[in-house]
Image 1 (spheres, rainbow, N blue to C red):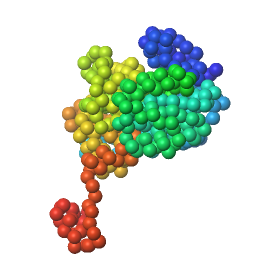
Image 2: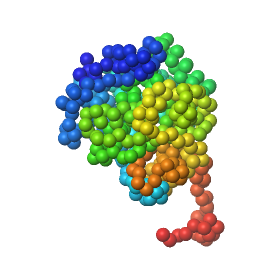
Image 3: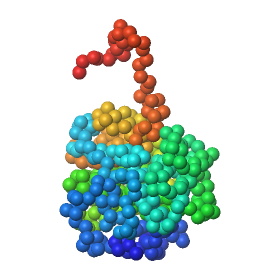
Image 4: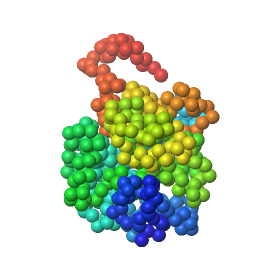
Length: 414
């Protein structure tokens, strides 16, 4: 029995369930939300207690749905750096900007937070095999975290998944099924296989514990900022699990009195696939969209966590912004040249959204913003090279080098 958790509650019908390790979705089809006992947490967690704890996501155990006896997962997940970026803030016209580089997690994405939670809960459930469908990052994070914990994995990815992510999967020893179809078809096949063989389900749409892992990114941001929250928090959105988790973490901190302000969320999606943002903008139920973007990790035409995501955006009085693939790649280059942070296309979509909102005058000189980079650029080098170009290629000849510099207008002095 979890001392800090009251129950799991359906976001659609309100039905409550005991928070057992192998919890899935509600009988009505709705996603479950973990409901905490905030009085218990307030009595057992203080800011001073956190100071002596290891710098991983597991430092927030009182705010996580795991048994006291469940060990931390083997890989060091969490406590990624939060950089204050004055140069980029000035360039965009913001008062303050921080960049949270979650691509520095063990398998190079924020999804490690969810996968570490899945591994912990699978261990509690006594499972030896975990499975999921993914556009790439959830897959590689599960494969890596499960491998470190000695668990077997079956991973379903759409055939368009970038080779860097597939290479991670194969290296981690996962059983990889490349599905000849889009993400929706990939998800359906994984669901059928999980039902048939009874594997532990890591799919974000089914397993309510995953957003609890993801919320640790916002717990860290709050602590790293000395519990003083920004005006806005920007993040890229695909199936909706991450933005829902971020909001859950912020609400948890507000409920126990660790923060006295909730930031507004900025939901950034690709112009070629933005069903969640479209639902907010048009104030209508979400509808499926084609997956027409190079930002593969957020190319989700049928978002499985739409209900929680929409609630998070609305509750926070959030802003939705859609960016083109060109704007995404420009943001990748901008983050690289001004911050030294290399994010994959989906990982920098939040920053692309911030840049666009600044250009539109929605954000300005009085605003403070945190932008989360959710994945590392080495996962998809093909698009980075395509946008930034190839390096100069020359023989060992200084005269030719000088000539090439002149031709390109390159200055050799600062």
